Image: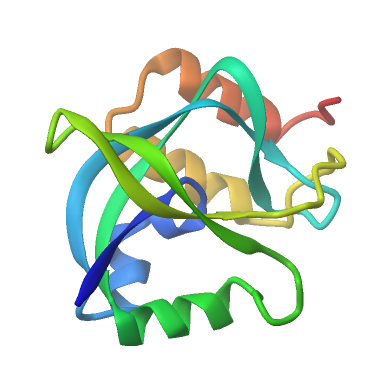
Length: 146
């Protein structure tokens, strides 16, 4: 059995994601509505509830085995992230689909870890996200948001 996973940060990079999870199937672009992308005080991406905002990302179909590995990678046991099933718009299906989304409870704004945002920004360009969203990502790499 497989599940759909919505990636909005470093896991949008198809090359590195496939290296870690070779059974994963890339399913195209997606967007999480009424949330915004932030870098938290740990220096990594998360999303926070924000009516009217949108987080762009990609959709992966992953196996149960990959899901367990992904939970480890995202630090579920350590409390770095928790996972939720949320309705995310899938461009492939032209419909909202239930997808696993990793969210940190830490929404204190911070600066990204060195090298983190360039990979996210590069992935956003590769997936042809809107220019205004890519500019938002660039600003996350440059300044502290509140």
